[in-house]
Amino acid sequence: ETGVTQTPRHLVMGMTNKKSLKCEQHLGHNAMYWYKQSAKKPLELMFVYSLEERVENNSVPSRFSPECPNSSHLFLHLHTLQPEDSALYLCASSQVTGSSGNTIYFGEGSWLTVV
Amino acid sequence: AQSVTQLGSHVSVSEGALVLLRCNYSSSVPPYLFWYVQYPNQGLQLLLKYTSAATLVKGINGFEAEFKKSETSFHLTKPSAHMSDAAEYFCAVSEGSGGYNKLIFGAGTRLAVHP
Image 1 (cartoon, each protein chain N blue to C red):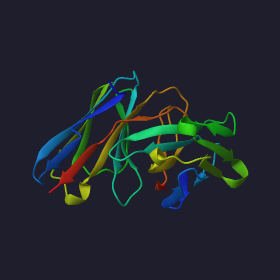
Image 2: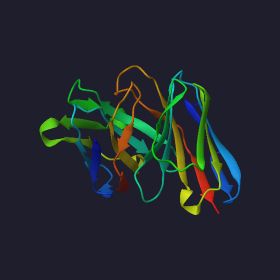
Image 3: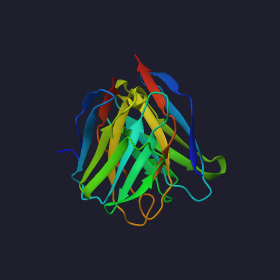
Image 4: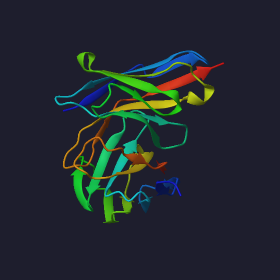
């Protein structure tokens, strides 16, 4: 198994749908992240969970709702999205040790298209 | 706030030629710096990172980067490009807080390698 697994890899949803992206890490880490990668913007940090507590929310609209039930799993719940939310959503994980130099490991991403 | 600037959104080299991808950072404290690579339809993979040990950092696939504090730079190089190096490369600085990392990414440089 790869270190960080994301499902589904591709998702097409209508603006009125509710869907979820799932992420699982097999590295024994205790911090997990959601990043958004769109064509015209640099990679944007959306949310950070450290020790299962949400510690960062970078002004993300409420139509994106994260959930971290345990240190190995992270979800991104999606509802009433807009076409401009179409992007690659990357999940990542790292170990919390007090150092800012720890490597962040990324999954392969979930391609989201909102129609 | 920390930031990263990557000069050149597209770089094209011949196979066997030197690869040079430029990255400049802005940080008020000694930074942790990273280079990631993204192959088509994949997530981000760590190439190398600087964590205040040696200023010349060697990474995977023959890449290396040199930290130059006086120039606030962390350029990525490879002596001889391979066709398989064609990908997008991201420089990032870590803005840590509470032990977890916040990677602030540059806009990316797309490397093309032609025969």
